[in-house]
Length: 117
Length: 418
Image (cartoon, rainbow over all chains, first blue to last red; front, side):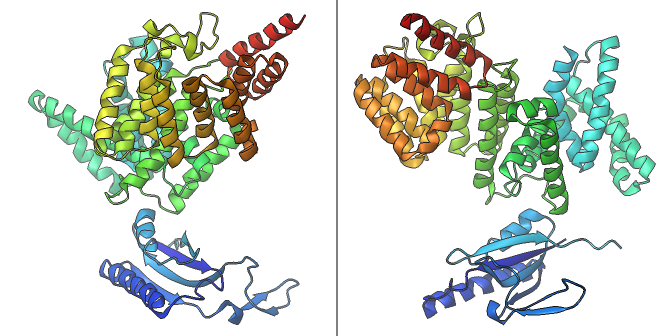
């Protein structure tokens, strides 16, 4: 069963971090990737470009509307994600809990809908 | 009588069935059917020797029938093997089998506890799940405890079950690394349920002893699983220490008897000793926490042979420690009471209470605040204000035994003023 771990923080959450701090975060990410790969639970993970680079699409009257910026108006923006393949939620929480969460970063764990075969 | 027997065995039977069939929904359906058959069967043939085992056996058979009808041969295979084994077993194996069954049942119950109290479920939903599946209450009873309508409770339960199945919350005992935190979550739910039993909002039953005892029983199971978890023993000591006073808490007229006026010869010394035993063991682990501190306070009350000889100085000391690690409004309120009795100075206590209310305006939503306020004002001979405080308390009280006492107090003031 697949679980998507969505990483959110405010756009300025990483401002003011020293190079050593950033390196420490990267190390934590590599540890998590190493562990989840070794357990066969890693599917894919990516860091996203800045939220200002987002383009939001909608079809309010059937006609495609294209607008600048992220859809969500909350302060936190989606900055990256992991996709894990786990047996159950506790395993997913164990891995997602290893994602570094500096300055109020939050991680939302969502089960991916099962395909009916 | 029969219904009581069924209720008593319901949670353990449900746990065993979930463990066997791996589905809460199916286990629930089968157990419900088994319970209605039990009512019928037991009223004609009398209570079986082991009602719990009877319920599991019948429920299990119903589940097997269900799998047969669904042609779930994959799920059936282990049961057929199990049935054949059972048929072959001779009496020499029987004792060993019973011991294994007990381990199996205990393990099943623990799994069910951790599933119901999983932190991925909203706290209110955990409580609803625990009341339904661990306490064996029906929707109406849960609704009464929650002061909500049964429909809302049903929605909570449905939401919780849907989350368990879509997010695939495992039906297992958490791994060792997660255990301390997951146990904390379980203890919070069990303590809340114990308190609901100890001072119930159910208008017909001021005390629900069944809830208290089941909460104690489940806390013991957690303790057996994690004997080194100090706060589990602390909570056990706390519950047992309170439970020991049960027979002194209600007057023959169904009114609360405050601790000050309780007949202490009615306190259960065996339970007090048991509470002390758990508390001593817990404290030896060297990780004091809120439950242990509260249990220590209860123990000091239980040790005193009269209200007057209570060691209030030590109680105040413990409240100071408790307030440091858990500065909740309720803890701070109780500390004010301890301060009053430790110093005998009602004026100082009143000043502390006024300051607390200014810091924590939400405290006025809490019944205990108004009762403390009323007692203090009474001690300070401010009768009119005290009466108002009792009236405020009455407005917030849902407990019938407590309401009786409050009404009496309020009326006494009225008769004095005339």
